[in-house]
Length: 159
Image 1 (cartoon, rainbow, N blue to C red):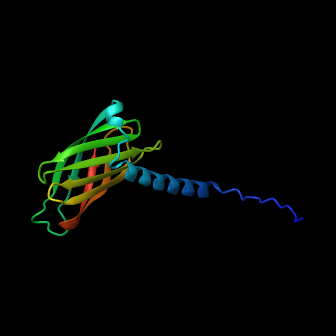
Image 2 (cartoon, rainbow, N blue to C red; image 1 turned 90 degrees about the vertical axis):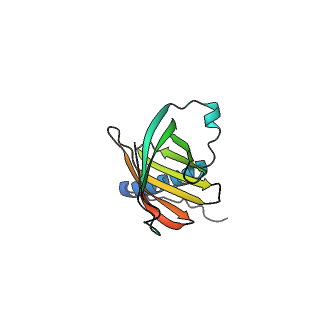
Image 3 (cartoon, one colour; image 1 turned 135 degrees about the horizontal axis):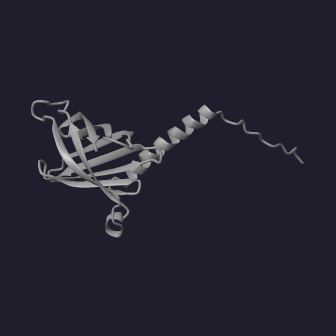
């Protein structure tokens, strides 16, 4: 019979754990936000939100055609279900709908993703990240991407 050996794991230093856990947490949040973007798991129908947060979405002009697609600012109302943030709004300009889903980590890190569709087939997306302030105004930095017209916008989400 073969010799039985035991494997010894080298204990990670504090810095290595922090980087590994931080990366794992951010990747997990990204997958969660993407999965929750269109599927709210029926929370709205089954559970009342614990809080409603008014937010202001501000985006600069579109990179591809700044003269035609100027900067804009809209109000959003997020329903908060624990660590899950949700907002849906009718987009009057493009006759469509926009859905935003966000996740707040226990450490205050936030990821918010949004997608929009128009009745004419246009599609666009938003991505925001940052740290939620426990006091005062929180500003998440992000971007807007669209395929038709193709371009990007620099955006922020403040609440």
